[in-house]
Image (cartoon, rainbow, N blue to C red; front, side):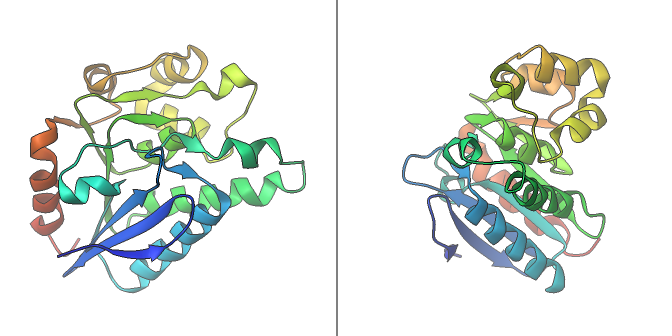
Length: 213
């Protein structure tokens, strides 16, 4: 089943659907899949629609994986937008990101995030909100917000300790470490490591495994 484009922007959204499942792909011309306000709004609407449609399993990745091609997950929030924020405009931007993260941890379905290439900053937040998290060989997972004097507004400071524990969260967020797939697996950030050539089939099998919670 070929994906269809459901949102067009600097980072667009592609969607594949089956009986009880959906696969969302992030797509951009530079391959970095930055999270702009428009993309977050579209992702929020799409996830809301999929909840109402009764989907039981949701996968989120870079769109090229739908064709078995390696790609980045997300380089994070669109820094051009972040630099333009003021105390008034920052609040809805952060809340929209938080709504997307809340969808991923909703207990009414199962979610899988496929971490590959760069998963940084807000992209790290997004990736770690998957209920199941898989890494593909070649991962670079990091959260450099503290280096730039930025406090993430997407919920990463809450989610990281839940997933990694206080010590692991401190190493990633405060210690500014960059983790490959092996380090991410050891820290508990991901549950499984895949070779690139196995990723497409593994995600498809996971989506088809159960169509009900």
